Image (cartoon, rainbow over all chains, first blue to last red; front, side):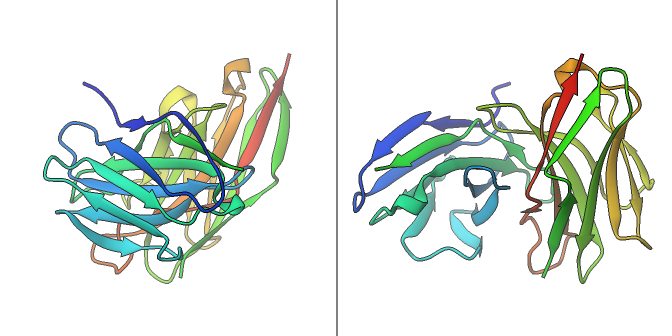
Length: 112
Length: 117
């Protein structure tokens, strides 16, 4: 049983560019959440998707957007990248009625 | 609003010694509480969770945590540290089902555990 997978593993972009990160949830899970973990910090909640809709959103600007597909996989898009967007982006999946979230290995984004 | 405070960004113990990582939370509604571990360059792995059953929760790798409502604490312990326990540990809180933020995890800043031979 594959766990949560994310791609790519690492990514380097320059300021002003746009980036798309991808996540495939654990088998049987239908809810996907995204977190940003800056160096030396705890993860911060970006948003959560369920039934292809954004269900909850954290304190992140509109430059951060997402999408969930019918197969429950998800994308995180970040526009107009800033140096401060450099971080590890974690995807977590869960079943609808359970609170336990399973995390993927993350995508390390570096903005130069 | 919910928040988590982890006391001590770095904890160092000797192999075989007691591990104690401290976590205090703030929540306006009864919470779910979690401890996650993160090894270098990896994602988060769930160690244990409190969801309103027994207040003493046992997790993987010999870890356990006790929910103390009066102290708003959820400290993580392990009787005897192993070298393989060296990692970063995160305490997290979320609302129970039905809350407006149900499913959103709020994490502490993390505690790096170092284990000396």
